[in-house]
Each structure stands twice: as structure tokens, then as C-alpha cells.
Image 1 (tube, rainbow, N blue to C red):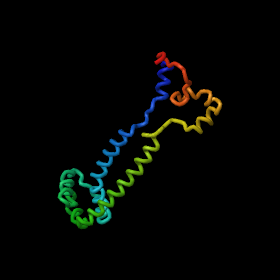
Image 2: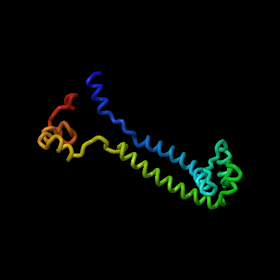
Image 3: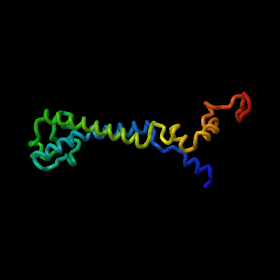
Image 4: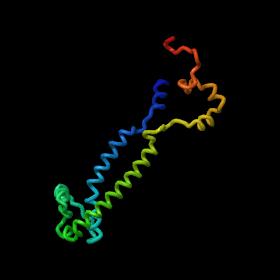
Length: 162
């Protein structure tokens, strides 16, 4: 392995970009938005009858019932009849959706901050650079570190004069 390759690997940024986070958040949001009514239905069935009921094998029936505004479709008849009215279930579903969106927002923000996406991840602040290298060394190397700010006047670039 050459020195150049190891240096390139060492300095490459592997943090996810902001676009990758947007796609991941949208897909996760869609999943949680679609699954929340079924989970609320299962939790309510569990509190009433002691049996956490999901529409196993009848997922299309359950979503068809939800599209028509009815909970309990796809569940066993005894569990479906024990559920409260559809209005109560929709209120509980809205509360569940709000909690899910809030939790997803908190987790997404934490993940973005943790991985450093859309930030200056890996760059030192001026104070940290001064601590690590010392102020005299930073001043002597200013034209190398920030050539856009501290370039020597009258100096030719690599390609020659303009």
C-alpha cells in the first residue's frame, strides 16, 4: 500500500451527506406512519383483552379497513369487537403519530450531530489548532493553511503567471 493511498483513506470523509439523511428519514417516516395505526390497535387490544393483536397474514385487509375508517379489520372477531369506537381509535392513532414523529425527530437530530452530516465534521476550531500546533507555527504556516486569506503578494502559482 502506497503512502498516497493510505493518506487518501485517512482523510476521506465517510460521514453520510445531508441528502442521505433526508432519504433515510423519509423512508423511516413513511414506515412509522404506516405502522403506527396497527401498533396502536395492538396496544389497545392488549390493554382490553390482554392479547397484543396484529393482523398477521391479513395486512392488506387491515390497511383496507383503515382506508375506510374502520379499525379491527384483519383481527380475530373477538379482539376486533372488543376495540373501542373508531373515533377513539383515531384520536389514539393521532397521539401515537405525534409521539412517533417527535421521537424520530429527536433520534434523527442526535444521529446527524453524532455523525457530523452537513457540518464541519473533522475540522478543528481556531482555538483547537492553536492549542495543538502553537500560535507561532500557525502564523508561519498561514499561507499554506489558508492560501485564500494569507497568500503572499506577487507570488506566482504552479502554472506560472496569469
